[in-house]
Image (tube, rainbow, N blue to C red):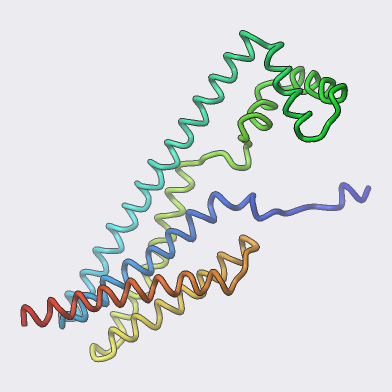
Length: 234
């Protein structure tokens, strides 16, 4: 077996589509559900009211994430299909111009004109649309928009993130409910930030600080609002 065949490369960019949706879904699940629970609990609500609010936030948030992600990625997919259809029409109506366009693209990347022409000719003969999709439009199968995959990942990860603060509501004493939910949620956010950074080959510390900071901000603000409303209606 040659060294080239035995050298299997794995790049983080191949995971960017589902990784982005999964991290966003889990982060939102923890932050939004924990923040709502903390806000309602700070208003001196009963355990059943806090739990009901958290469960409602879980289902509403998961569906919202799924729908939003599906619509967003579907729009991207529609744009990609329209670009490919337009490119295919141009290949049929003016193949010489499209071949010259491909030649110039390769030249701009440092290939001499004679070689660029030869490569463009061979690429056009093999898979003209695929060559233009990849080299002119920047589209590839690896990074193609997948609406259903993104929607399912977002909904599943939102639910997974929301479960942790909900479990705390069930088991924690009411007197310690707010700090317990905040502590568990921040720990979950830190783990999520570390996992996301590791999977994407990014700096771990920066990712953990980023998600923890915004988690603290969200819970602090909703706790303050809940306390104000609790005092006003008490």
